[in-house]
Length: 297
Image 1 (spheres, rainbow, N blue to C red):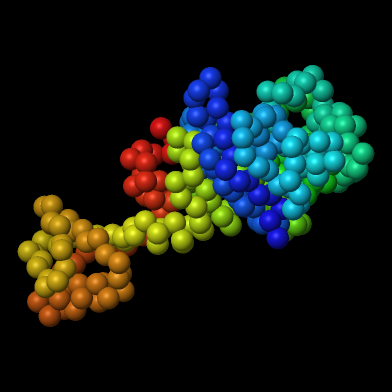
Image 2 (tube, rainbow, N blue to C red):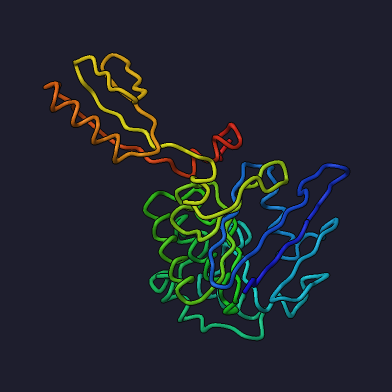
């Protein structure tokens, strides 16, 4: 079942096409990542789904029903992660969560949220005294204070150190295990690869590719790269080896077969091969091939 469906969504600003005919399907219980460089249209798309922006045209469906506006009925079922700059810095963590819980009819017990997001020890700490990772955990807690079915996370780990980022990933994975549907925007390819069931890549207001990580790599026909070092001149029939001062590189769609050929050649000729490694294509490679730039550009 599609819990959200977007059809031909457009959003124009004074003739500028911020979003230009986007189609998105979000299945219940999925983590869907929307990737794109700054200005690609991903934030406008998500803010339209949250009800913060009015689309120029297109259709939005929540829970199988077409909506014209994101009304109170829908808002009770969605949670939106705020940026930490939107918090009152003199409030404590407990006071902040209590304040947010007062905005909804149905809420999760604040102490349960503190426990779930590892904030018990920071319960009485003021927002202004928290670390970046702690602030993001508070932001995530406020996003689920109403026990929503759908959670919107906009760049949830920006600015965090690697350990804090992974801690937040664990919290997001736990939300998914509890049946939440998550819409995630991120600049981090590793984050999308780790968390997302489905990925949409947006550039210049359009979806340029969608699918699982495996599907995206297969659809763009990305190759793996085998590298190794040898002091000898290596030439193997049917393999297009590139050699720079003894460092060899081979692009391939059949890693196993070509590794065997290289090792058999080495054994037959008595040529020593060192530092052999395999690099499989990833989401960063896909994005670079599609757009000619990295995600953070």
